Image 1 (tube, rainbow, N blue to C red):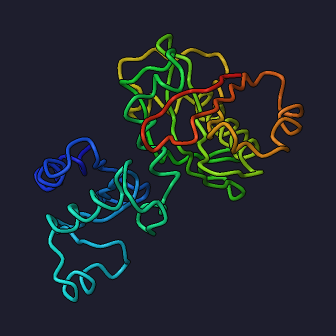
Image 2 (image 1 turned 90 degrees about the vertical axis):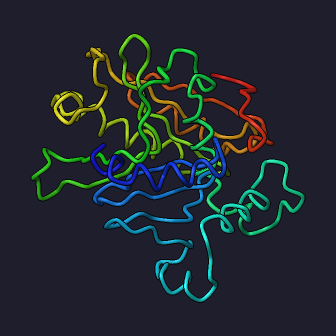
Length: 249
């Protein structure tokens, strides 16, 4: 929140150029603010400066192309628009899962009306192992972490295309979140302020376009822990034009 506050003026200026299309995310482990246009990072605020362009060497790219914030956002709003004419344009197809994530964050109740729209966190780092200082601990970054209106944690794993790892990744993050919940980490680090978290195991949501679930998903789900309440959510194929749930199992 401190990092967001420091970049507030720059972020506000960018968001005013394309209302509703730009998210400001603090990547884990940094004090940067990444600006994403419908999920695609196009600029990063670092040390009081805004660096434009998707490349790592943003200063060089900005100088070479003489890119301005206004021109870059104008280009993105043309080629990365839900109704863009060229569906094969690289900037339209890039970072599809992040685009899907941005739509889910905008209204998480589309995924499930039980979810609390006031508390949705992207790119949450989660450890596995016996503790944060464990030599065997691993670190992962889940898609979305939320909570129901009754205070039950919810792990939300998103895929925009067919991926055999969807169920396994979701289960992996579920185990990490349950471990952090049992340690009381979420309250300790300021997550879900004002929410009394239930001690019940988290919910697990697997979200993808309806025809993009890998055929092995159903088989893998038979072997997950019995205490995991898993909800599979199938979305419309043209989800870029707005999320619609076609089935929820």
